[in-house]
Image (cartoon, rainbow, N blue to C red; front, side):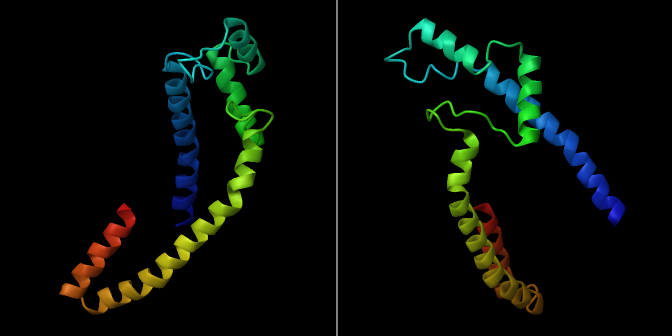
Length: 143
């Protein structure tokens, strides 16, 4: 069992690397740049060039990817493109308590409803109660 868990964890590393490569490539294959958000008021080319240099978007893509992965491993998500003078880490940290509360509340609700429903479903196998419990569980997972 321990070997199975270790293999799964070791397989997660290349899977995460491939997913990060795919998402990085997709983000860079989109036309334009992060500063083209308002087509009605485009930024002057000098400002776009300065922002591109500031965010190191003028580096070759392999270097950008390596820098991105290195910063992610260090826990540095970099500056925000949308909010001036704020880092992505500060934005995540500000909203993290709310996310924790929502996650714990969802866990509590699923345990309070799921465990009794599972017990009843196990005791009343292949009955209307079991089918209702299965429907309720699948609906909950789907949402």
